[in-house]
Length: 490
Image: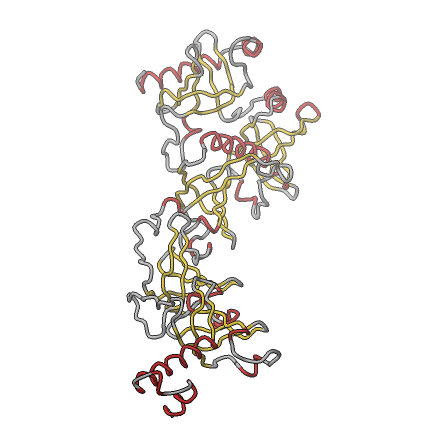
């Protein structure tokens, strides 16, 4: 069907429909097996003409709607062939086999039409002719109606006088005295349209689908987005790969965004009229993942910025969207170094390990003076080695010492009381205050299991001195006791 044929048919139908007697309309309403006046129908658009939009109800019947109902303010059409549209049956013509529909009943021309609209819960179009203290004065096909101020809009209307002269949709809520008192509600009509629009959007939504929406509000926990009648939430964690970016930094009301539907599920409404679906959206899902192609060799020194300090450690930003954890156990005695850290502070760290699947990076403090990009070689702490370090914590059962040249728990170990070479009951805090230098021998290794001995280190030193003196004396038989040798050495 060409545009000319479609337009001429629409004109012919309008002319024929205007001459159909009321009895014919009533008969069509009683017809079985087909649409009746007042029915809500849905079909697929098969032709968009200049004046009419034609859509197919089934293989045997078609309907059309005035094109003006689908024309935007700038004159463009909001529907195209293949789209699914919905409407209300206004007239049925058995002779021509077509159905005329509309988004509303149009301008009901008499009280009977208003009663039909009310009975079938259908909107009608009326023109606002004036404003009084109580609400709007509305003319509907020659009949006068009244819209209370509380029903003028979905929200409070500051200046209702701006609506004067406009033709709007209303729901008929009351008809008194044979049509002398007609009460209508624009709010109910708007809510109906919103619900229908929401239903249409929900039918098209699904997890993984990309949709476009408009940001309606931004909160600390995320941003609300209008998807065309229904609202979804982008949680803060789904706004950006960079956890340091707040919702207010990334979005503002009025922004148009493309998002991915992460979750869609039905929920019981919190109150009448409240949403019945929970829609979770993601903005970051459409952005490149900074972990893709990320190269961070373990043992490499990096410069980072602390983003937040928590009880268990500090998170350090290494790149946009990439953070590592500097665990409290790597921050000295009882995490005392942690108290010196604050968000925004620059730090040098070493990449200890990377879990790409879980997207977790473990960090340790970089050695003093280590340059960014350098590879840090771990100090070998083999059993039997004698090393030096400083006390960084004192407990009743011993002291903890940090080996020189190390930072974090890889170089921190315990010297038990029995290995300190002191008498029982002594005050360890007085004998070994924090910072005391010790020379110890490694008894046991392993992260978190380092164990040292001061006694063993002294024994090793004395043995070394003995061997030195013996070698100088020439023969073990000539020097008597070990003590004599030491006296000669001194």
